[in-house]
Amino acid sequence: AIDISKLRDLSGAITYDPGYKNSGVCKSDITFLDGEEGILRYRGYSIEDLADKADFLEVSYLVIFGELPTKAQLEHFETNIRKYTLVNEEMKNIIDGFPKTAHPMGVLSSLTSALTAFNPKVVNVENEKEMYEAICKTMGKFLVLATWTYRKSMGYPLNYYDNTKGYVENFMRLMFELPTGPYKINPTVVAALDKLFILHADHEQNCSTSTVRMVGSSHAGLFASISAGVSALWGPLHGGANQAVLEMLEAIQKDGGDADKYLAKAKDKNDEFRLMGFGHRVYKNFDPRAKIIKKAADEVLAELGVNDPILAIAKKLEESALVDPYFVERKLYPNVDFYSGIIYRALGIPTDMFTVLFAIGRLPGWIAQWKEMRVNKEPIGRPRQVYTGHPLRDFAPMDKR
Ligand code: ACO
Image (cartoon, rainbow, N blue to C red; front, side, top):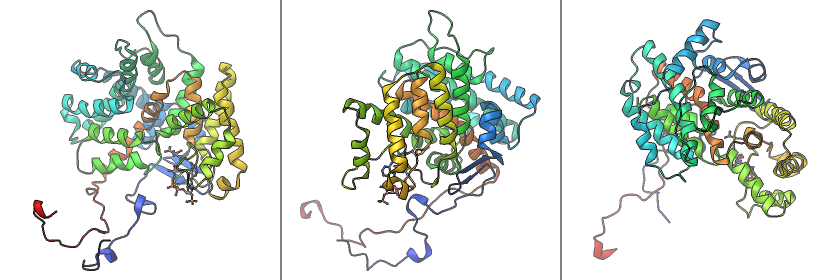
């Protein structure tokens, strides 16, 4: 055991808060979240209203710039995003360097970081015009690169944004269009995706967003900060949960489809297994986004006529967990990732791409939080620690170890 009694005790001056469960690290005007009541608002507008009445670019503008756009502002925003969807041809060489089997989130994080090399001005924005340009560049290029990670994995030729189509329509086209002919866009699919992106647009100081702010606080630049956000989002305890949910459902199906067996495993404290898509750090009531997505999932599945045994397992898990004392006492409700994975599957999105879709949705939030941090001239992020290692030791030469 390490004897730390010889150390000067510094802990009195430090708040020990692992996981930052109770630390407010910034002031923010962007997102209001009340986890007890299940309330989520962007810039004061309820998530229910926004998901119902606005589209993703409108919400992106709201989240980033603070107000709903006028028609002219939205057109200007969209035109500028479109203008920047072209990606430097040399980026294709970088994509070619990845194996086809690479996970799209790793590729996306690398490509986003690589953008800095081709757009050095985005590193240090000096005025509002440069800030606006950096934002539009990020919104434009990130979407294209995100879809290219999929095209790479499938061996499809890389394609470009179609200026006659909307942002979310372009997402589907960029993903699925083949050289054999134009891709037929399904408006039901686009509407469902639009809603999903809106629901993901921001969620205050979650792991990836606080990472974006942390990296940005060293003035590393927008692309580098977003790239770090992508990496943070990738993990299965955060954005990677939507992929993990589907993998879990598939595993349950393969194992005979017994949902109750996995419910029991999740409750067993000697078993590391957790029910993916359940629980949330701040929502100790139903996640308001999950309510909206659950309804959207039911509608999309009915309209597309999807009949998938995986979904029956999901329903069973959901119904059982909602009345199981273990989950009820701990307030573990299905979260947004539980239902988003189900919709993505119904829309024909490959499982590996689920978290990439989350990243596309979260992009305006990351940008808004980075912008707020820069505009407010926040200091560099630098948490403290409580040291529990050895006191000073004598150096042991190699032959004495
Ligand atoms: N399955 C089974 N038990 C769970 C689960 C779960 N999914 N989630 C939490 N618990 C239990 C814990 O074992 C713990 O039990 P105990 O009090 O008996 O020790 C209790 O509930 C509290 O859990 P914590 O881990 O302390 O909660 P925390 O706030 O740290 O974690 C998290 C939240 C990471 C989301 C967790 O619930 C989890 O791992 N869920 C599964 C992964 C997931 O769905 N992540 C997506 C989150 S949403 C998002 O990122 C968009």
